[in-house]
Length: 380
Ligand SMILES: Cc1ncc(COP(=O)(O)O)c(C=O)c1O
Image (cartoon, rainbow, N blue to C red; front, top):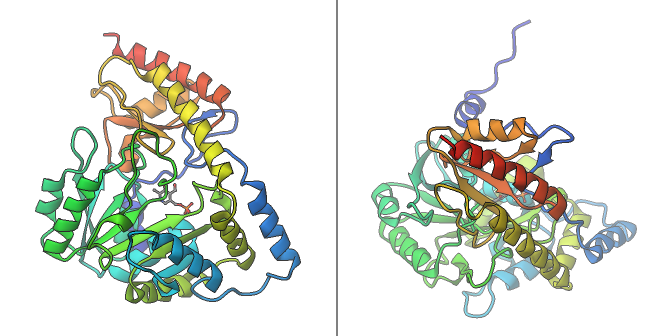
Protein backbone atom coordinates (compact mmCIF):
# COMPACT_ATOMS: atom_id res chain seq x y z
CA UNK A 1 0.00 0.00 0.00
CA UNK A 2 1.37 3.41 -0.90
CA UNK A 3 1.98 5.87 1.88
CA UNK A 4 -0.50 8.74 1.91
CA UNK A 5 0.80 12.06 0.66
CA UNK A 6 -1.24 15.16 1.36
CA UNK A 7 -2.04 17.58 -1.43
CA UNK A 8 0.40 20.25 -2.51
CA UNK A 9 -2.06 22.75 -1.05
CA UNK A 10 -1.80 21.21 2.42
CA UNK A 11 1.95 20.88 2.22
CA UNK A 12 2.32 24.48 1.14
CA UNK A 13 0.26 25.67 4.11
CA UNK A 14 2.15 23.47 6.57
CA UNK A 15 5.54 24.43 5.17
CA UNK A 16 4.93 28.13 5.77
CA UNK A 17 2.38 28.22 8.53
CA UNK A 18 3.25 30.12 11.67
CA UNK A 19 0.43 28.48 13.61
CA UNK A 20 1.38 26.26 16.54
CA UNK A 21 0.29 22.66 16.80
CA UNK A 22 0.54 22.20 20.55
CA UNK A 23 -1.56 23.24 23.53
CA UNK A 24 0.05 23.89 26.92
CA UNK A 25 0.20 20.71 29.02
CA UNK A 26 -2.26 20.37 31.90
CA UNK A 27 -1.03 21.99 35.12
CA UNK A 28 0.93 24.72 33.36
CA UNK A 29 -0.10 28.35 33.91
CA UNK A 30 -1.45 29.32 30.54
CA UNK A 31 -1.16 32.90 29.39
CA UNK A 32 -1.26 31.56 25.86
CA UNK A 33 -4.94 31.16 25.21
CA UNK A 34 -6.91 33.30 22.80
CA UNK A 35 -10.25 32.68 24.44
CA UNK A 36 -12.25 34.39 27.17
CA UNK A 37 -12.27 32.40 30.41
CA UNK A 38 -15.83 33.53 31.19
CA UNK A 39 -18.91 31.37 30.81
CA UNK A 40 -21.21 32.36 27.98
CA UNK A 41 -23.86 34.68 29.51
CA UNK A 42 -26.90 32.91 30.86
CA UNK A 43 -29.55 34.44 28.61
CA UNK A 44 -27.62 33.18 25.58
CA UNK A 45 -27.38 29.66 26.96
CA UNK A 46 -31.09 29.76 27.79
CA UNK A 47 -32.01 30.89 24.28
CA UNK A 48 -30.06 27.94 22.92
CA UNK A 49 -31.69 25.42 25.24
CA UNK A 50 -35.15 26.78 24.47
CA UNK A 51 -34.46 26.66 20.75
CA UNK A 52 -33.47 23.01 20.96
CA UNK A 53 -36.59 22.22 23.00
CA UNK A 54 -38.74 24.08 20.49
CA UNK A 55 -37.42 21.88 17.68
CA UNK A 56 -34.68 24.06 16.15
CA UNK A 57 -32.80 20.92 15.25
CA UNK A 58 -33.11 20.97 11.45
CA UNK A 59 -30.98 22.53 8.75
CA UNK A 60 -30.92 26.31 8.86
CA UNK A 61 -31.10 28.44 5.70
CA UNK A 62 -27.87 28.12 3.72
CA UNK A 63 -26.57 31.65 4.25
CA UNK A 64 -27.85 31.88 7.82
CA UNK A 65 -31.21 32.27 9.53
CA UNK A 66 -33.06 35.23 7.94
CA UNK A 67 -33.86 36.89 11.28
CA UNK A 68 -30.21 36.70 12.38
CA UNK A 69 -28.96 38.00 9.02
CA UNK A 70 -31.40 40.90 9.21
CA UNK A 71 -30.35 41.73 12.75
CA UNK A 72 -26.68 41.60 11.76
CA UNK A 73 -27.35 43.80 8.73
CA UNK A 74 -29.04 46.32 11.04
CA UNK A 75 -26.08 46.16 13.37
CA UNK A 76 -23.52 46.62 10.58
CA UNK A 77 -25.55 49.34 8.93
CA UNK A 78 -25.96 51.46 12.10
CA UNK A 79 -26.34 55.25 12.22
CA UNK A 80 -24.21 57.13 9.72
CA UNK A 81 -23.25 53.96 7.83
CA UNK A 82 -24.34 52.76 4.42
CA UNK A 83 -27.52 50.71 4.65
CA UNK A 84 -27.08 46.94 4.67
CA UNK A 85 -29.64 44.22 4.11
CA UNK A 86 -29.63 40.48 4.78
CA UNK A 87 -28.07 40.05 1.30
CA UNK A 88 -24.92 41.68 2.67
CA UNK A 89 -24.54 39.05 5.40
CA UNK A 90 -23.30 35.46 5.49
CA UNK A 91 -23.48 33.59 8.81
CA UNK A 92 -20.45 31.33 9.18
CA UNK A 93 -18.76 28.72 11.32
CA UNK A 94 -16.92 31.15 13.57
CA UNK A 95 -14.84 34.06 12.41
CA UNK A 96 -12.51 31.41 10.97
CA UNK A 97 -15.28 30.20 8.65
CA UNK A 98 -15.89 33.76 7.48
CA UNK A 99 -12.18 34.34 6.85
CA UNK A 100 -11.80 31.07 4.95
CA UNK A 101 -14.91 31.52 2.81
CA UNK A 102 -14.00 35.12 2.01
CA UNK A 103 -10.37 34.54 1.14
CA UNK A 104 -11.05 31.40 -0.89
CA UNK A 105 -13.86 33.20 -2.72
CA UNK A 106 -11.83 36.30 -3.57
CA UNK A 107 -8.20 35.25 -4.04
CA UNK A 108 -7.01 33.61 -7.26
CA UNK A 109 -3.85 31.53 -7.57
CA UNK A 110 -0.94 33.94 -7.85
CA UNK A 111 -2.85 36.89 -6.33
CA UNK A 112 -0.88 38.94 -3.83
CA UNK A 113 -2.46 39.84 -0.51
CA UNK A 114 -0.86 42.56 1.60
CA UNK A 115 -0.81 41.64 5.29
CA UNK A 116 0.59 44.05 7.89
CA UNK A 117 2.41 42.02 10.56
CA UNK A 118 2.47 41.10 13.39
CA UNK A 119 -1.10 39.86 12.98
CA UNK A 120 -3.38 36.85 13.30
CA UNK A 121 -1.68 34.10 11.32
CA UNK A 122 -4.79 32.60 9.73
CA UNK A 123 -4.92 35.21 6.96
CA UNK A 124 -1.59 34.14 5.45
CA UNK A 125 -2.44 30.44 5.77
CA UNK A 126 -5.72 30.94 3.94
CA UNK A 127 -4.14 33.02 1.21
CA UNK A 128 -1.69 30.18 0.62
CA UNK A 129 -4.54 27.69 0.66
CA UNK A 130 -6.11 29.71 -2.15
CA UNK A 131 -2.81 29.55 -4.07
CA UNK A 132 -2.15 33.22 -3.46
CA UNK A 133 0.91 34.93 -2.11
CA UNK A 134 0.86 36.68 1.28
CA UNK A 135 3.00 39.81 1.23
CA UNK A 136 3.92 40.45 4.87
CA UNK A 137 4.52 44.14 5.56
CA UNK A 138 6.06 44.98 8.94
CA UNK A 139 4.30 47.58 11.03
CA UNK A 140 6.01 50.70 12.37
CA UNK A 141 8.00 50.59 15.60
CA UNK A 142 4.90 51.71 17.50
CA UNK A 143 3.05 48.75 15.91
CA UNK A 144 0.70 50.99 13.96
CA UNK A 145 0.26 50.50 10.22
CA UNK A 146 3.21 51.47 8.07
CA UNK A 147 1.03 52.95 5.37
CA UNK A 148 3.92 53.93 3.12
CA UNK A 149 5.04 50.31 3.10
CA UNK A 150 1.46 49.14 2.49
CA UNK A 151 1.20 51.58 -0.43
CA UNK A 152 4.51 50.35 -1.83
CA UNK A 153 3.27 46.74 -1.73
CA UNK A 154 -0.20 47.57 -3.08
CA UNK A 155 0.26 47.91 -6.87
CA UNK A 156 -1.11 44.77 -8.51
CA UNK A 157 -2.27 43.23 -5.20
CA UNK A 158 -5.78 41.87 -4.79
CA UNK A 159 -6.45 42.54 -1.13
CA UNK A 160 -5.13 43.96 2.11
CA UNK A 161 -6.00 42.17 5.36
CA UNK A 162 -6.05 43.98 8.70
CA UNK A 163 -6.88 42.86 12.21
CA UNK A 164 -8.26 45.73 14.28
CA UNK A 165 -7.96 45.76 17.30
CA UNK A 166 -4.85 43.80 16.53
CA UNK A 167 -4.14 40.30 17.77
CA UNK A 168 -1.33 40.02 18.98
CA UNK A 169 -0.24 43.63 19.58
CA UNK A 170 -3.36 45.10 21.21
CA UNK A 171 -3.05 48.18 18.99
CA UNK A 172 -6.21 49.91 17.78
CA UNK A 173 -5.81 51.67 14.44
CA UNK A 174 -7.04 55.25 14.26
CA UNK A 175 -9.72 56.64 11.95
CA UNK A 176 -6.91 58.52 10.14
CA UNK A 177 -4.98 55.31 9.52
CA UNK A 178 -8.09 53.59 8.19
CA UNK A 179 -8.88 56.58 5.98
CA UNK A 180 -5.40 56.46 4.49
CA UNK A 181 -5.80 52.72 4.02
CA UNK A 182 -9.03 53.42 2.13
CA UNK A 183 -7.19 55.88 -0.11
CA UNK A 184 -4.56 53.25 -0.90
CA UNK A 185 -7.27 50.65 -1.55
CA UNK A 186 -9.07 53.07 -3.88
CA UNK A 187 -5.93 53.97 -5.72
CA UNK A 188 -4.86 50.38 -6.38
CA UNK A 189 -8.27 48.68 -6.48
CA UNK A 190 -7.74 46.52 -3.41
CA UNK A 191 -10.35 44.64 -1.43
CA UNK A 192 -10.05 45.44 2.28
CA UNK A 193 -10.47 42.48 4.59
CA UNK A 194 -11.09 43.81 8.11
CA UNK A 195 -11.25 41.35 10.97
CA UNK A 196 -12.73 43.17 13.96
CA UNK A 197 -13.09 40.18 16.28
CA UNK A 198 -11.99 42.25 19.31
CA UNK A 199 -13.96 45.44 18.60
CA UNK A 200 -15.83 45.22 21.93
CA UNK A 201 -12.63 44.95 23.96
CA UNK A 202 -11.19 48.47 23.79
CA UNK A 203 -9.92 50.47 26.78
CA UNK A 204 -10.64 54.14 27.44
CA UNK A 205 -9.49 56.66 26.39
CA UNK A 206 -8.87 54.79 23.12
CA UNK A 207 -11.79 55.09 20.70
CA UNK A 208 -12.47 52.36 18.22
CA UNK A 209 -13.43 53.16 14.63
CA UNK A 210 -14.76 50.34 12.50
CA UNK A 211 -14.00 50.14 8.79
CA UNK A 212 -17.77 50.24 8.45
CA UNK A 213 -17.58 53.88 9.59
CA UNK A 214 -15.04 54.95 6.99
CA UNK A 215 -16.87 56.80 4.22
CA UNK A 216 -16.47 55.47 0.70
CA UNK A 217 -15.18 52.04 1.71
CA UNK A 218 -18.46 50.10 1.66
CA UNK A 219 -17.93 48.49 -1.76
CA UNK A 220 -14.43 47.28 -1.01
CA UNK A 221 -14.89 46.09 2.52
CA UNK A 222 -14.96 42.46 3.60
CA UNK A 223 -15.95 42.81 7.23
CA UNK A 224 -15.38 39.69 9.36
CA UNK A 225 -16.84 39.34 12.81
CA UNK A 226 -17.38 36.64 15.43
CA UNK A 227 -19.42 36.10 18.57
CA UNK A 228 -16.45 34.23 20.07
CA UNK A 229 -14.66 37.01 21.94
CA UNK A 230 -17.34 39.63 22.74
CA UNK A 231 -19.82 37.13 24.17
CA UNK A 232 -17.37 34.44 25.36
CA UNK A 233 -18.78 32.05 22.76
CA UNK A 234 -15.64 30.46 21.29
CA UNK A 235 -17.09 26.96 21.42
CA UNK A 236 -20.35 27.89 19.71
CA UNK A 237 -18.65 28.63 16.42
CA UNK A 238 -20.68 31.55 15.17
CA UNK A 239 -19.24 34.31 13.04
CA UNK A 240 -20.25 36.29 9.98
CA UNK A 241 -19.18 38.24 6.94
CA UNK A 242 -20.61 41.59 5.87
CA UNK A 243 -19.73 42.56 2.32
CA UNK A 244 -21.34 43.47 -0.99
CA UNK A 245 -24.00 40.95 -2.10
CA UNK A 246 -21.68 39.71 -4.90
CA UNK A 247 -18.93 38.88 -2.43
CA UNK A 248 -21.41 37.31 0.00
CA UNK A 249 -22.84 35.12 -2.77
CA UNK A 250 -19.34 33.99 -3.77
CA UNK A 251 -18.25 33.32 -0.18
CA UNK A 252 -21.49 31.39 0.38
CA UNK A 253 -20.54 29.02 -2.46
CA UNK A 254 -17.36 28.11 -0.59
CA UNK A 255 -18.89 28.08 2.88
CA UNK A 256 -21.92 25.96 2.05
CA UNK A 257 -19.90 23.48 -0.04
CA UNK A 258 -17.40 23.08 2.75
CA UNK A 259 -19.56 23.08 5.86
CA UNK A 260 -23.25 23.65 5.08
CA UNK A 261 -25.30 26.07 7.17
CA UNK A 262 -24.42 26.84 10.77
CA UNK A 263 -26.08 24.88 13.59
CA UNK A 264 -29.69 26.14 13.84
CA UNK A 265 -30.01 26.47 17.62
CA UNK A 266 -26.68 28.33 17.82
CA UNK A 267 -28.13 30.96 15.50
CA UNK A 268 -31.00 31.48 17.96
CA UNK A 269 -28.39 31.91 20.70
CA UNK A 270 -26.45 34.40 18.54
CA UNK A 271 -29.59 36.44 17.96
CA UNK A 272 -30.18 36.51 21.72
CA UNK A 273 -26.58 37.66 22.20
CA UNK A 274 -26.97 40.47 19.69
CA UNK A 275 -30.40 41.72 20.73
CA UNK A 276 -30.40 40.84 24.45
CA UNK A 277 -28.87 42.66 27.44
CA UNK A 278 -25.30 43.82 26.93
CA UNK A 279 -24.57 44.09 30.66
CA UNK A 280 -22.60 40.79 30.71
CA UNK A 281 -20.31 42.20 28.02
CA UNK A 282 -19.73 45.29 30.15
CA UNK A 283 -18.95 43.10 33.16
CA UNK A 284 -16.38 41.10 31.21
CA UNK A 285 -14.88 44.37 30.01
CA UNK A 286 -14.60 45.63 33.62
CA UNK A 287 -12.66 42.51 34.49
CA UNK A 288 -10.36 42.77 31.45
CA UNK A 289 -9.65 46.37 32.44
CA UNK A 290 -8.54 45.26 35.93
CA UNK A 291 -6.35 42.54 34.49
CA UNK A 292 -4.76 44.92 32.06
CA UNK A 293 -3.87 47.14 35.03
CA UNK A 294 -2.30 44.12 36.69
CA UNK A 295 -0.21 43.39 33.59
CA UNK A 296 1.01 46.97 33.50
CA UNK A 297 1.75 47.00 37.24
CA UNK A 298 3.84 43.85 37.02
CA UNK A 299 5.46 44.17 33.60
CA UNK A 300 5.14 47.86 32.79
CA UNK A 301 8.57 48.84 34.05
CA UNK A 302 10.72 46.01 32.72
CA UNK A 303 14.23 46.92 31.63
CA UNK A 304 14.60 47.45 27.89
CA UNK A 305 11.68 48.42 25.68
CA UNK A 306 8.83 49.69 27.86
CA UNK A 307 5.60 47.73 27.52
CA UNK A 308 2.85 49.66 25.74
CA UNK A 309 -0.50 49.23 27.43
CA UNK A 310 -2.76 47.48 24.92
CA UNK A 311 -5.47 49.79 23.50
CA UNK A 312 -7.71 46.79 22.99
CA UNK A 313 -7.90 42.93 23.04
CA UNK A 314 -6.81 40.81 26.01
CA UNK A 315 -3.20 40.51 24.85
CA UNK A 316 0.04 42.23 25.81
CA UNK A 317 2.88 42.11 23.33
CA UNK A 318 6.13 42.25 25.26
CA UNK A 319 9.43 43.09 23.57
CA UNK A 320 12.35 40.98 24.81
CA UNK A 321 16.12 40.82 24.65
CA UNK A 322 16.88 40.90 20.91
CA UNK A 323 19.73 38.43 21.32
CA UNK A 324 17.14 35.71 21.85
CA UNK A 325 14.45 34.51 19.49
CA UNK A 326 10.85 34.70 20.63
CA UNK A 327 10.70 30.90 20.46
CA UNK A 328 13.61 30.74 22.91
CA UNK A 329 11.90 33.19 25.25
CA UNK A 330 8.62 31.25 25.11
CA UNK A 331 10.55 28.01 25.76
CA UNK A 332 12.26 29.63 28.74
CA UNK A 333 8.88 30.70 30.13
CA UNK A 334 7.55 27.18 29.62
CA UNK A 335 10.45 25.73 31.60
CA UNK A 336 9.34 28.00 34.43
CA UNK A 337 5.78 26.72 34.09
CA UNK A 338 4.15 29.53 32.09
CA UNK A 339 2.87 29.14 28.54
CA UNK A 340 3.02 32.22 26.31
CA UNK A 341 3.22 32.56 22.53
CA UNK A 342 6.30 33.57 20.55
CA UNK A 343 5.80 36.69 18.48
CA UNK A 344 7.17 34.82 15.47
CA UNK A 345 3.84 32.93 15.29
CA UNK A 346 2.31 36.25 14.29
CA UNK A 347 5.15 37.55 12.15
CA UNK A 348 6.42 39.60 15.10
CA UNK A 349 9.88 38.33 16.02
CA UNK A 350 11.42 40.10 19.03
CA UNK A 351 8.32 39.99 21.22
CA UNK A 352 6.13 37.46 22.97
CA UNK A 353 2.35 37.55 23.35
CA UNK A 354 0.70 36.95 26.64
CA UNK A 355 -3.02 36.69 27.15
CA UNK A 356 -4.85 38.03 30.18
CA UNK A 357 -8.00 36.07 29.45
CA UNK A 358 -7.48 34.17 32.66
CA UNK A 359 -8.45 34.70 36.30
CA UNK A 360 -6.48 37.27 38.31
CA UNK A 361 -4.89 34.77 40.67
CA UNK A 362 -3.45 32.65 37.86
CA UNK A 363 -2.53 35.77 35.95
CA UNK A 364 -0.63 37.21 38.92
CA UNK A 365 1.36 34.01 39.41
CA UNK A 366 2.21 33.86 35.71
CA UNK A 367 3.17 37.54 35.54
CA UNK A 368 5.46 37.30 38.58
CA UNK A 369 7.23 34.34 36.99
CA UNK A 370 7.60 36.21 33.71
CA UNK A 371 8.84 39.29 35.52
CA UNK A 372 11.61 37.25 37.15
CA UNK A 373 12.46 35.74 33.78
CA UNK A 374 12.68 39.09 31.99
CA UNK A 375 14.77 40.58 34.80
CA UNK A 376 17.20 37.66 34.71
CA UNK A 377 17.47 37.97 30.95
CA UNK A 378 18.34 41.64 31.28
CA UNK A 379 21.16 40.86 33.74
CA UNK A 380 24.43 40.69 31.80
C1 LIG B 1 -8.26 38.16 15.17
C2 LIG B 1 -9.04 36.90 15.19
N1 LIG B 1 -9.91 36.66 14.22
C3 LIG B 1 -10.63 35.54 14.18
C4 LIG B 1 -10.47 34.57 15.14
C5 LIG B 1 -11.24 33.30 15.02
O1 LIG B 1 -12.43 33.38 15.71
P1 LIG B 1 -13.42 32.16 15.80
O2 LIG B 1 -13.17 31.47 17.09
O3 LIG B 1 -14.77 32.81 15.80
O4 LIG B 1 -13.22 31.29 14.63
C6 LIG B 1 -9.55 34.76 16.17
C7 LIG B 1 -9.34 33.73 17.20
O5 LIG B 1 -8.42 33.76 17.98
C8 LIG B 1 -8.82 35.96 16.20
O6 LIG B 1 -7.91 36.21 17.17
